[in-house]
Length: 604
Image 1: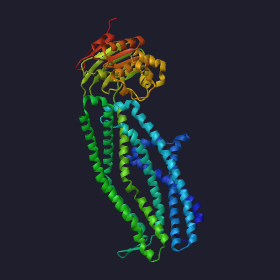
Image 2: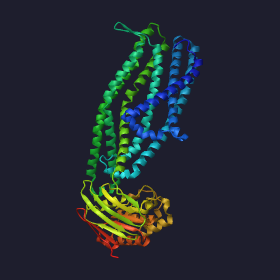
Image 3: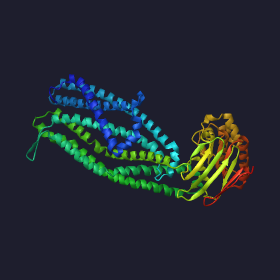
Image 4: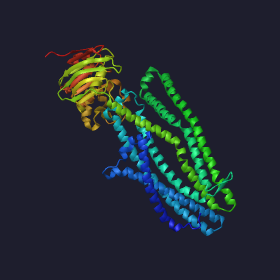
């Protein structure tokens, strides 16, 4: 440490240093970020995922993400400056010990204590700001990707794309969290490393001496050797760790597939138990788990090479500065404080240069996360681009013109269907299995991409589709009853009345109990709840896909009669196999093989 080093001027000098470095860092970071987003694939992926959040607008809130990130950079730079000052205070402490100067020792202990206290506050503030930043970013990104997944029924129609996405639930829940955390860690870590690199290189340059090697004298030898040593180690580490990108991607996909299989077994526990399918399920689960283990072994073997190389480099680096400076120390050319400060500076330069090498594993995982999130957005866009039967909002009935429905392979299910239903009409759709009954309902709903023609019908909450097993959402029984409306859509008295009408009066007192009702209710009870949902929502058109298959014929007659009495103007379109349904409908559509069909309508 130079004898002229004046601690009284360091506070003001450090403030100016932080401001100047911060300004340079912001400009350089913006330039590098632009280049990465323009010329690298993963940079473009980041831009696609996050520019909506960071793009500044006319309001103060729109600038908050950028300003918060700038504050994080400022705190990181201030932290580096505190580390630099800490090395000078440590130098003073060791030098005072060597020279047996107690006054100087106490003075530098006091300086070190002040720096330590300020550093503690800087770390605490940085942690809070970073956590808040990630929380807001994760919330905004979740909202955006969740909306993108739901918009245009992409969550359903995505299965019809050329490359359906696997485990969207994991991508929305886990990958968004990983993306926000890893983006912050890598960006701030890179800035911190580069600022540290410059700051401690200056110290190392100041304390480095010449080194004679093979007859040649190398000035400032330790600085040059440090850079050469770490850069060579980093290049080799990149080559060793390159396969980790693909292996991490596979690990995420295989793990999510295994977890989904476990959830599916839990949701279908009763059916599996009745079939006594435990051995088949066990075999399936172990097969999926085995694929995870096989990939994980590949990760382990590659990780052993990667971590072993990095750890070896780090261990050698621990003694490197002492080996280089020891001859000068024993010759009295440097003091003990200089030696320890040089070792600390070398360690910081080494760690800063090694950031990208040590972070390669994290960056490999980060690349996999980018691929998974942008892959989900790609499939969502592809799903929305799939063909759809044009649907006009008509309030006076249901009209189908020139509708042709095919299988994915192009084979015709229904050809040139034309149909008119007025308020109060009802239609039963029947035919052998595989003739397109359910596909017809999917086409009318706008989900089936292999259909052409035009449809005119009520839209929004004026139409209700009821599947064979009604979907029961999380929440109370009232949530299940009013779905897709909110629970407050119906009063408790009206809800209990409807439950009585569909022969579910025994559930009236459980209306506001929050439970897994899809497991508690039998298939027949769930179908009766579906009819109660029709009564509560009062649609103009109700599509019922085998909605009485788990109900006996007498109860089926009672429920259809109830619907017709309570909702006389509602158009009913039912799919079913029972002949008893014919008498409950005014029109009869019979689907035949090879796209043929017949329609029986009442004669006026």
